[in-house]
Amino acid sequence: MISLSQVCKRYPGGYDALKNISFTMQHGELVAVTGHSGAGKSTLLKLIAAIERPTRGSIIINGQNTSSLRTAAIPYLRRNFGLVFQDHKLLFERTVFENVLLPLQITGFERRESAKRVRAALDKVGLLDKEKTLPITLSGGEQQRLCIARAIVSRPAILLADEPTGNLDAAYASDIMELFKSFNQVGVTVIIASHDEAMLKRLNPRLLKLNCGELAS
Image (cartoon, rainbow, N blue to C red; front, side, top):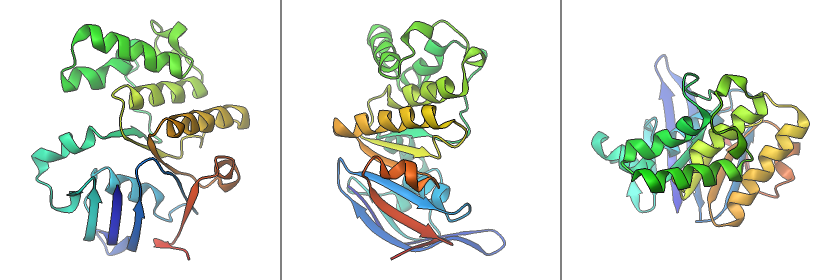
């Protein structure tokens, strides 16, 4: 479960990115966060993933208050998450396989099991035949699929995606959204932030709309 109560985020200079945000998500929900550019969508996802801390309020993830977690505990919390952000952060000097393998190496997975998981994730996103290639050779849509494979290889309970189709054409964007829907159908909690409401509505998600940092009623 994810629960936010009166969450605010103020950046230096007095800019309030989020103001008094409160909502609860149950395990296995598919939620879309919409709103104009600058509405606070990216900030909200970063707070949920504990990449940033709220200025005020509480964020409860599976019974843990992330607002008061020790810094050393945050990497363990993040093992619950798969993250797909606008900046791919791909390692272009490493192969497709090695990019997806990295999260498992960091958490100390056994090599044989890691290889099985990597190939299963690549197969899920349709990139298994490109495991030995470098990311620079992939199209924009394929690079996004690679990011998704990396996000799901640890089999997270919660998948967060920030504008995952922002730089893709309509066909690629539709395919990516169907991938997220398929993950949700097997029990993964999915939160997608996007300004493209028409694309999101095809998934029939629960909609949360942000307007200037506040939840619209």
